[in-house]
Amino acid sequence: MSTNGDSVIVPSGNPGLANYPHGRLAPATQARTLYVSGTACRRPDGTFAGVKDNGDGTVSFDIREQTLATLHNIEATIKHASGDRSGLESIIDATVFLPNIHAHYVGMNAVWNEFYPDAERAPARTVIGVKELPSPKMIVEIKCIALVTVEN
Image 1 (cartoon, rainbow, N blue to C red):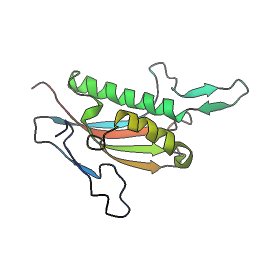
Image 2: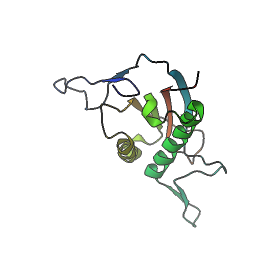
Image 3: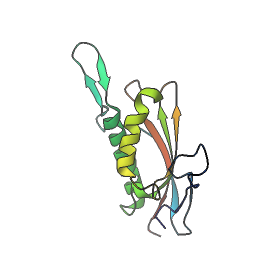
């Protein structure tokens, strides 16, 4: 069993189900449930990772850099809540919001798979295309639930 419980992966013989966790069974532990608010790539100084000013009045966005920064921000929240006892491995469920799912899904998913290369340990995940996010500089936002180890 992984620290985020047991994966529920329906055998690949079922049409329509891809090879990822379709669910997670939370472990029977003394862990606490942490609900992480929608998190993006915003830095402490108010700037956003993965946003480049092109110098001609336009900006470009890097979905990989934004996804990486977003996951690091989530990890900081989990580590803070658990006193550094838990990290991204404790996420049991995540929802990813993308305003341009067709353009950004592949890049987001590539970074996600770097963090979770083993489907048996990856959180359950839903990706939703949305009209917009709170800032036009955000092209990905993730909210999640984690089971964290805390001091009693």
